[in-house]
Image 1 (tube, rainbow, N blue to C red):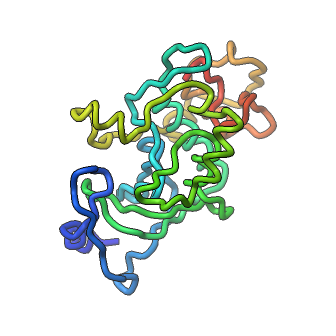
Image 2 (image 1 turned 120 degrees about the vertical axis):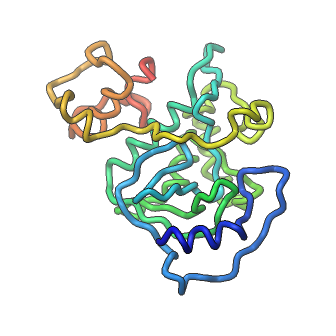
Length: 237
C-alpha cells in the first residue's frame, strides 16, 4: 500500500467511528493493489492493529476503549479495554502473520478490514465469541450476532459483569474518543530480553500483565488462562 494512494482515498472515506458523519461508499478499487495487507501485527487496542505502519480497524465489531472500565461479577471496576487488547495480542501471536482484506476507510484514515490469522481464523469472530468485543450492528448487519449470543450465554469476557457499549462510552467521553497513538500490545522484541519460559505454575510467580501474556503466548504447554478467554492472570491485567 502506498501513502499517496491512502491519502487520495481517505478523502472519500466512510466515517465508521463517528455516529454523526454520513456514510459514503467507495467504488471497487481492488485493481489499485490495496486489496490486502499481510504481516506481523502490533496491537493498538481491542479492535485495531498496525501492520507495516498502516492502522487497521476490524470491520463490524467494536471493543472497549483503551481507558474504558467495566464491572466484573463482583461489581468492581476493571480495565476491560486493556484486557481486550491483551486478549487480542495473545490470539494473534498464536498464528502469524495476519492478513486483512480491505472494506473501507474510517475518519482517522484507518484501513477498515476483515482480518484473519495465518491459520484462517477470523479475528473479529474470535473477539466477539470470547467476549472481548461486541458485534456492531450498524456496520456488521448482524454478522457476529450469533457469536455474541454465545459469549453472553457463556458469561465470558465483558459478559461476566456489566459494561457500557464502546460506542456509548465514546459519546460520554468525547475527549478520549480518538484512537490511541501508541500500540498497547506486547513488544516481543523488548520482553524477550527479560522474560523466559522457566516454569510458572501460579500467577503469583508472574510480575506483570505483560509478562503473563508473553508467557501464555510463547511458552507451549504452560497455560495460566483458566477461563480460556486469551487473557492470562487476569488479576494482573
